Image 1 (cartoon, rainbow, N blue to C red):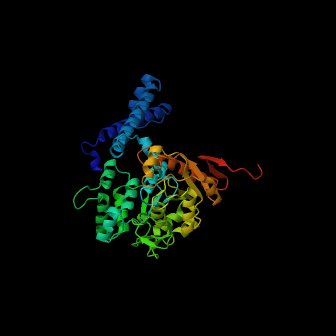
Image 2: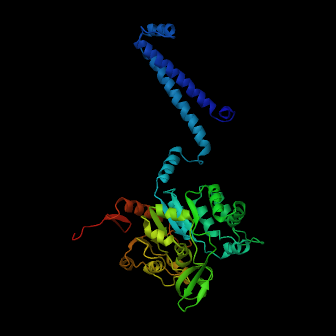
Image 3: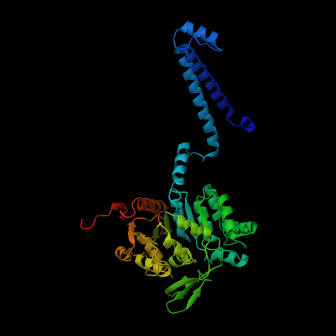
Amino acid sequence: MIKWLCLGMFFKRWLFLALLGCGLLLTGVALVVYYYTPDTGFFLEKSINNMTVQSGTLLPSMVIMVAGAALMVYGLCKAMYSVIGAVTPSGDKLVDVIYHRRRREKGPQVVVIGGGTGTPVLLRGLKQYTDNLTAIVTMADDGGSSGRLRDDLDMLPPGDIRNCLVALSDREPLTEELMQYRFAAGELKGHSLGNLVLAAMCDITGGFDQAVRRLSRMLAVRGQVIPATLANVRLCAEMEDGSVVCGQSKIPQSGKKIRRVFLEPCNCYPIESALQAIGEADAIIMGPGSLYSSVMPGLMVQGISEAIARARAVKIYICNVMTQPGETDGYSASQHLQAIFKHAGAIVDYAIVNTETVPTQLVDWYRKDGATPVVADLEAIDDLGVTPISGELLQEGGVVRHHPDRLAHLLIRLINGYHRQPEQVVYINNYLQPKQAAGE
């Protein structure tokens, strides 16, 4: 309590002003009470009697009451804003901070399964609508900085986890730049600072999952980020010619068509909190991201796809905008779904597919690497028993990717509409429409 009275708190003056106003208000109330009950009298009887006799009206006491109330309210408001202004983000209005925070706290429970660059894009959009987010992140990355740390320190790959933590962070932009900083020279060339921080945190806490939780608190993450498994797994692919390629980074380089992918060892199990989040979810979202190297590895951890099938949540797959060279060459949107059904079962209710035309210059640039826009074969998707949702979802820029805000807005509308009337609502061209009765 003494600290509130220290110099420089910008609090005492407003508190004393509020107390003065409270005193005046009580004095005014006392005058009014005495005016209407002059025969009772009390400890201020003499002074009050002089005032009331001279005035013969309630005006002086009413003026004191109004002035006291005004001073009390003004002092309390200034004291509150003095305190709140020291802890709220710079430039943000208090009412906006409270409104958005309360709205996000009541948002739907959403689980996102994936990795790579697609999942963080989605999380950035969704965190504007809900704090109840769980990212279940693929643990099969073995390239770049993650692969080096994995081999050198015998740890799980931190790269995809880092990207999701940064995407959900509520810290200032400089923190994101620091966590994403990549060294350009020396022995640390190619390493991301965030990966090194996670590696250090593993040694401090004694476990990868503990390191992720501790770093989540440091970054003020909205929701939670969970590794799909704590097992040291490798992604392997059986090709159409019967050969097997192991290593996520090596599969696209094989130049062969993929028949199926699998994890090695196959008896890898998820963290209990991941299964719990799936069971409690209002929506489970798979993708966007590389089909075989980002989405599939999370679904193939034992128990994950079974938990998704049992969940009451709406299950949504977000199809990539472009094909992935060495993975999904020539795949249409329905073929992406067929691959998921082949590996994990029929666990998709809705498929979100971009129908906005990719700029010609970007198509030409991507074609040099063997990537082309994914064909939105909506009728084929519907034939698979999945409701297609089409929309213009591209973000302008030098790369082709989903617009985080448009995608998140579409998803939230779908999730809310599904849980209000799951049997009465269907999504058509980005608008919720009631299903027509048979024969209409």
